[in-house]
Length: 132
Figure 1 (tube, rainbow, N blue to C red):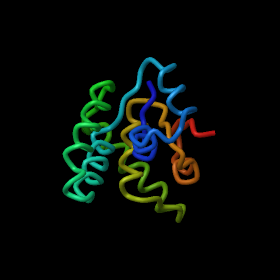
Figure 2: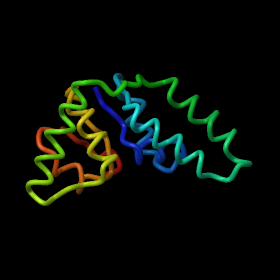
Figure 3: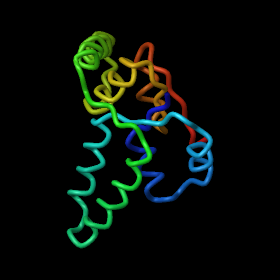
């Protein structure tokens, strides 16, 4: 199972990367966390009002092709472990990134991101960068 990080979803929605689109088409199990979905909705809410409806429709079309996984108790437990680990090492990453990483880690998903620098700090998280 491959999970898309927010930055990858944005790249897909903006049609910026032919390489990324090819990899998506070649992958069978693709999903994302409700945390990522929330970030995407937040981005739409910040956009100019005249573009919001179109962006909402575009997002709905995109996510209809994916599996969306709800945050659960296992994800919360992984969040506590990951955040404590990073804090003790003095290498914290953004809170939303910790939530996304913990959620992916809790189900053993491979997180597809172009933010390897931050996510590589998370122990036992499998990541891939499809933008390379």
